Image 1 (spheres, rainbow, N blue to C red):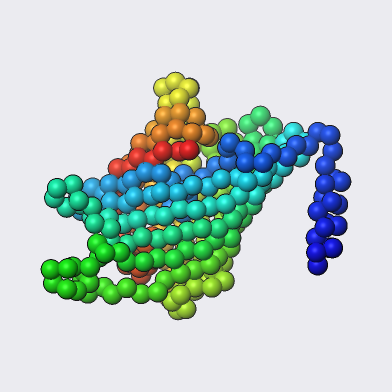
Image 2: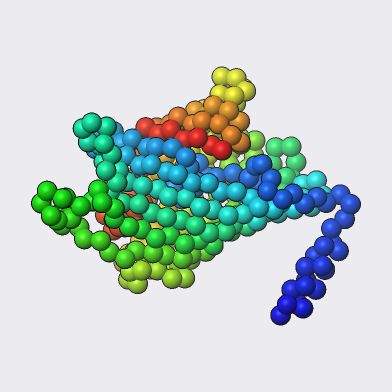
Length: 276
């Protein structure tokens, strides 16, 4: 097996011509995160309106290697590592942590710039998610778990493929995920999604970019259900790079937190996100 891998590696190098280029640890992502998709790397918070809950996201995706094939095609391999955390607000600026979800994995990206305004691409992710209750979910004064909701095992390993088509500032995408291992085992193994995002430039200046994004997921628990995610905001900085996003978010569907995977949620929120 080692000999075969050795031969394949050097065979692939032989296909690289003088116009090709390899980058190690490039400064930007080959495939930009899909704005309204919940499972994307974020550094920021989401404050629910009319409810005593907020979400804290800490995470990042980074390309480890990029292969530029000629001028138009880019292949990449990278890693994902992030958390999304459910907190509550209390007096004296206390924010007990109720639940936390961890995601880590690897991703493969492909992008082809057809011309100056059109682009196609795809991202394949192999990921693991696990979910846990934290001490903020325990009511110490009454010596019991909040709302009688006991901790339960939730984890999943999955393959996710999302392909997109971009023309000017509009990107449309569709994808599917296959959960090849999941706990509880009663959860079905197929999920689907579609979405779109549109950035408006040259109105408020080069570094002020209003945007609208929508993501629809069809998830399969014991039966199929719909998750809707809408983001409307403005990004300060490069629309496809580093910056700060301020946005309004609306969400309806099953909870994104694994410990509450079969709970229905609907809320509006104000969000802030630092794109690094």
